[in-house]
Image (cartoon, rainbow, N blue to C red; front, side, top):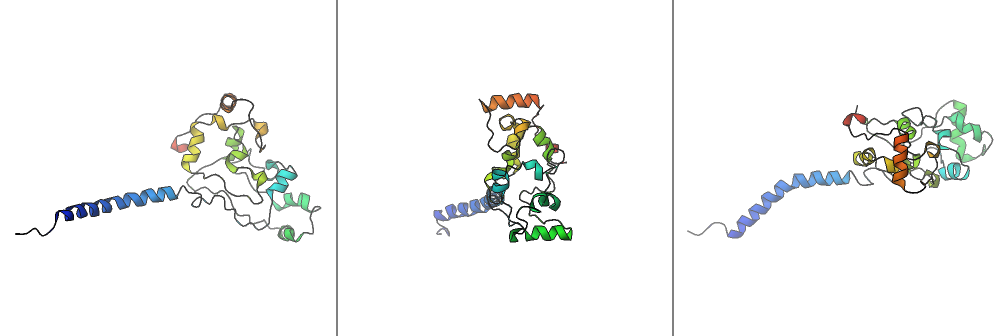
Length: 216
């Protein structure tokens, strides 16, 4: 009696079941890779803000320190955004009739806040404290990039768990003196690792890789 299936059918069946078994793994792998792409992390795509705030002008041209507007960064988990009154310290006199600042003036007279769009957003299950990082010598540029060159602030780092753990495992090369925290162009003198190791000892910086460091 002739065989119902040719030897080639065995190969096709093996391929079929191989694809069935490999598809879930490929889907999971694809999703993991997608989650690490700039598009999935909203990198390099500045959100539209209610007021056109140019960091190039305020930071680069005027030399305004980051801590003037983000005053909570050294003592609070949150860096904070400037209240309308702080903006009006300057803009009650400077550009006080500019149509671009009409929303600011309206918020001032109506006693409302500006609904700024967040650029960096962490999941609710992630705990992050700005103050501990800056007081241990992690500068603004490390996580936020060269905001002094940005017409509109955009997210330049992925903030994935792997990205954070790179620093938590080996913080020394990323440390700087506290007096240079907001200096966007600061570079260490000599070897970055040697300078970082000295700061690591001076600021009592420890590696932090336990789950409870960020997930509490």
